[in-house]
Length: 88
Image 1 (cartoon, helix red, strand yellow):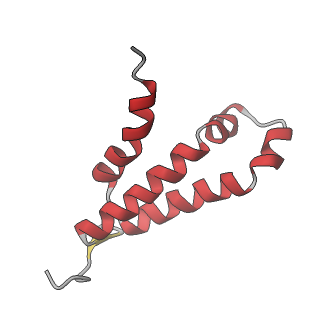
Image 2: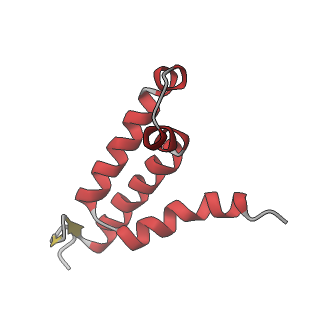
Image 3: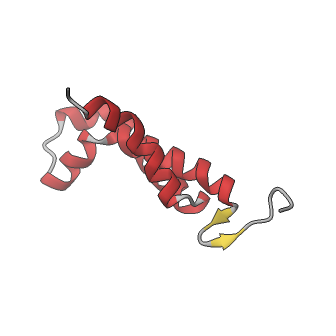
């Protein structure tokens, strides 16, 4: 059995639990959205090795950023500073 589907579905969530921060996650999510927005342009462009790898993982990067923001709200953490959003 190939574990790739299970890994692709759970890795972004586990990354967000590890990296839970609203500020840093927002930058990662914005980078993922930028890659998704420019998907067609980047498909046709000659990208270098680093940018080609990021283009390949654009959906994963966006989901990792989303779950990092989600976990950051749960942890009340923004740029490693505690927030008092829920009065805890």
